[in-house]
Length: 203
Image (cartoon, rainbow, N blue to C red):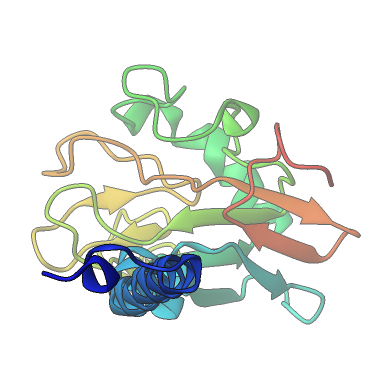
């Protein structure tokens, strides 16, 4: 090997260093580009985010006695505008209920632990799935509409569970607990937000 071959000029060293840096930078860009799809796959999809997001329901046009069904987190939710007669019936059926004070098993937020199981007595909000096997009960508000002594409420045709107009289960029903009250709050009087807890979220 000649002295000329063995000794590299400063220009050659600088060229070699630049080439090494350029190669490393290119490799880093390729790795970053390949990682993007993987990182994106870890983020929740738009559909998943939508299923867990709170929903808003305008109840201004809900007439007394009318029941509206909406969907939250893939579950049906009832919003019922209770009449004065419906509210008065809640006290008269207490002796026939499994858990009239909702204390044996808590199925509602603390702010709905009251005789009407609601924030606003006239507007009842509940997940409309029977606590027996998850069927959707029938809204049967008229006394006698299911059977002779039927006081009015919700009836599950799958296995005969009965609930009053506050979603409290009648004794003798296959359903073990009252209907579930979801977290919710009222904004501006008629705007219902399901999915925000009234105790935590600003109204």
